[in-house]
Length: 247
Image (cartoon, rainbow, N blue to C red; front, side, top):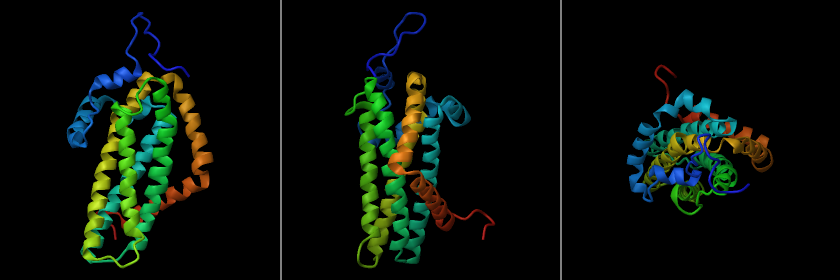
């Protein structure tokens, strides 16, 4: 597929290319220190495409990404809650942490992030969005930061000696930092990147949906995908905050 500006509007005035549109928003800074400001800006600017309206405007492929974000967010919040409980109890819970790292390594990193990078982001690059800078540069970098955070948790889960108080403190810090990073990253995609793709690249969304389906079947595997969903459900049920009145 050829890259470059999208087709002109009916009025004859050529719109900005997809890349120019993203860059022109000025919302993707180079420093993660800007993250809180950016998140508030996304919510304010894009309130009209959130919630039900967002889902209505997206095609099935992008709606699936948003749904996966919701699953990941629930397990992230469960991880933070569980890590705090482990620290308070002074427990050595390496085997339980292995369940969390299995989910985040296989579902968040290898399924979700890889699917975005190898399908959606490649389509955006074909339409002129730079890989190494601007919005996609930030998305790629944040994916690598998320993978590095997962590796920190994996090291704690598989260390040979029982956890010390210092290890439990490291667990709480790693869980909190990972959760904040990934929740903010997903909010950028949900509230800005995906709606922008929906508006600017509607002709290619069917292709993206087909490639996502192929990725799920042939890269992740249908059985593995179901296993990971069940793992997420189990982690939340066992370790998530209890609702009021729940035993």
